[in-house]
Image 1 (tube, one colour):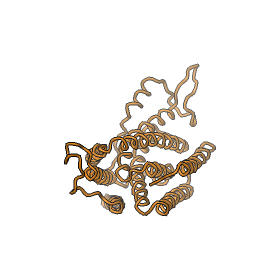
Image 2 (tube, one colour):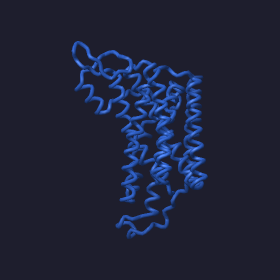
Image 3 (cartoon, helix red, strand yellow):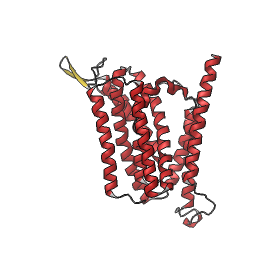
Image 4 (cartoon, one colour):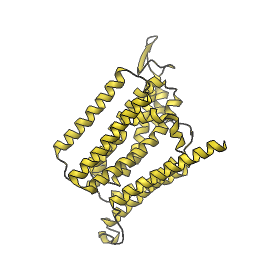
Amino acid sequence: MVVTPLIWAVSLVLVGALLVVDVAVVARRPHIPTTAECLRYLAFYIGLAVLFGLGVWAAWGADYGGQFYAGWLTEYSLSVDNLFVFLLIMGKFAVPRQYQQTALLVGIILALIFRGIFIWAGAAVIDAFSWVFYAFGAFLVWTAIRVGREGESGDDEFRPPLLLRLVQRWFPATDEYHGVRLTVVEHGRRLITPMLIVLVALGATDLLFAFDSIPAIFGLTSEPYLVLMANLFALMGLRQLYFLLGDLLKRLVYLNIGLAVLLGFIGVKLILHALAENEVPFINGGEPVPWAPDVPTSVSLASIVLILGVTTVASLAKTRRDTRTG
């Protein structure tokens, strides 16, 4: 896949323009978005992702188009998992709903920055050391086991990351929100506000999630351009999705199990891919292993759609059944 510097530049400028407009709208008027507003934005961003995938399909072929869609769906599902943690953070720090939109937007911007760094680093490592797919695959299988052990999604307590605990310990803070301001001066002292603490929590959480999401998408495509664009489109509309779904996210009780199966599938796919293009000296003399199949993009895409579909249907059926019996 040959992506010219012009295509890179145009893509990043267009995405950057969308982000600037989004920031300007929120900064001008922090508010609780209506359902109609959320639906309009969400439909717009999903439509853009679908059109972009069709453009990739037309320009570089069906296989690359399928790689983008597979990566986008995977990153979108992992981003929905982020929303559960965001809900816990907002509840933990009692963020007023009119300020939650600003907090989420800053959190998404931080996620874009962290994922961009991880994508650049991941692509560089893969170019230099092809055997890193073994490490990525093993990491995803381990992550799948860890996520699967959590079982059904519930109202688990928010466990503050180390960075957040250090900020809370070292910096004096106010007890009340002062709009979306990050610091205030009280009695001659500069204090941080709860909003700054919330942003640190969101940023630290985004950093932790990047460790899972970036190896996962590199298991579906090794093209940095598709990896970056899939991540960008997955994060677009996440803020609106948060307000649109709200407590309905808690109805996806089997999301952890579904994500565990999804990450496990991609992890095994990565290991098989590494075996098929083996360069590790102590395995088969560094020659390709003929019995290791390389899972086609079409199979990956179909598997992802099936896993997410079954997870959603089973979750909604269980919550409906629990509601009737309760």
